[in-house]
Image 1 (cartoon, rainbow, N blue to C red):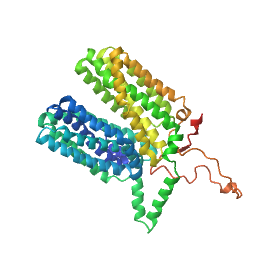
Image 2: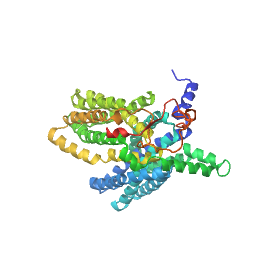
Image 3: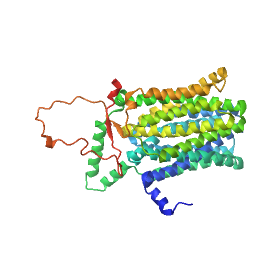
Image 4: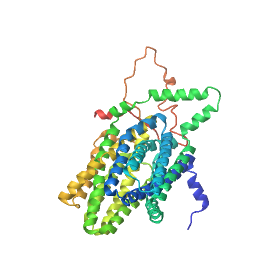
Amino acid sequence: MAAPPGKFRTALGRGPMAVRGFRLLLAGQLSSTVGDYCYAVALPWLILSGDGGPVLLGTVLACYGIPRVVTIPLGGVVADRYGGRRIMLLTDLVRAAAVGVLAVLAATGTPTLASLAPIAVILGACSGMFIPASYTLLPALLPKDELGRGNALSTMVNQAGGLLGPTAGGALVAAFGAGPALAVDACSFLVSALVLARVRTTAEKEAERAADGPEGEGTAAADGAGKARETGPTFRELLRHGRLLHVILVVALVCNLAFNGTIEVALPGLAHEGMGATGYGVLLTCLSLGGLAGSVVAARSRPVESPAYLFAVLAVVMGVALGAVPYAGGLVGAAVCVCVYAVASGWQNIVVVTMLQVWTPPHLIGRVMSLVMLAVMGTFPVSVAVAGFGVRQLGAAPFFPVAGAAIALAVLGALTQRPFRTHRAGTEYTGPARAPVPSPTPSPSPAAVPSPGAGAAPSGPGSGPVPVRQDSSQESQR
């Protein structure tokens, strides 16, 4: 039975979907993701159809991958300095132009390395700038207590695009060639840029309202924001004292070292031994569908008081499911294990991203997320190389329990760290505790002392009952 239209309108009018900028962002994300997958199909097809072959393809991908990794830290810095939305808008416009040139080249002949390499460098650099900036936009649009659901919905849209994009890209390339598929990708960047131009963050709305008010009010608001930033924690201070960030970075390194090699090397090796290409395709589909299901679960679940324990439980589920893949009884059992792993992984990713977005001071989110993305992406070459050696020596099957145990033990080890274990939802980092400076003036009377939290600004419009706590992270000394 179909849901009544009134209930549908009610669902759109509450939570993250009630924010117009968030709805626009989801539309831009879907367009861009579908376009990205059209590009992912069209580029290899274009190169492999010419004389370059795998060597040219690998060289072009290296020209893309290296600038992407190198520019991730820069992307975090400029996103914090100029605003994530502006950086995302600019990089989308540049990528639209670069892919448009590539589409023209594809339509007029087979591009060479001399023409492909500069385009790949531009696209890689823009992608590296875009990634950390994208993590700053949701905290600027949504109140803190809605970030979990917002991240889940955003991830669901990206995963839906990941299911639609390859099919659309393959059909376009098969019917019309690589050029039209690349043109679709260029148009998707333009759609995303148009959407971002229409989005307004909470701070931008407040600045516009202040500028329309009495003369000087806008300047005063800007001065106040600048002073707040000056008195807030610095990035160097956060790196030194933010023990929660240290723990999450180590966990990200270990888990991605285990995951990347397992999925990219061991899983196809296992499928090649007894499941065939069709079986491998089924496993990859289960990986995508499981990730989407994990995002749905995260969107519908209630926020937990202790996200670290949920994070650890999901890691244990991931480790057990991944370790059981080769021993679950053929393709059906392996598919079930992969799906369970992906559900837990999709849910866990949203938990940790939300935790960091709430904990990190707003003016440092870009740089913090750039560090996390470096930990995630920088491990890829090492992980696949280690996996290649390990699978050759031990075979594909033993690699799965080893990787699963590494993931589970890394997160369980994180629970031994008190800043991670005792972290509570809604906690913000405010810097190390400092000794109070003695005052020569008499202490005020008890009636003049405000109660804790009095006069504190709300976390954002529409904030719910989730409290925002203060965290000095001095547990790093224990």
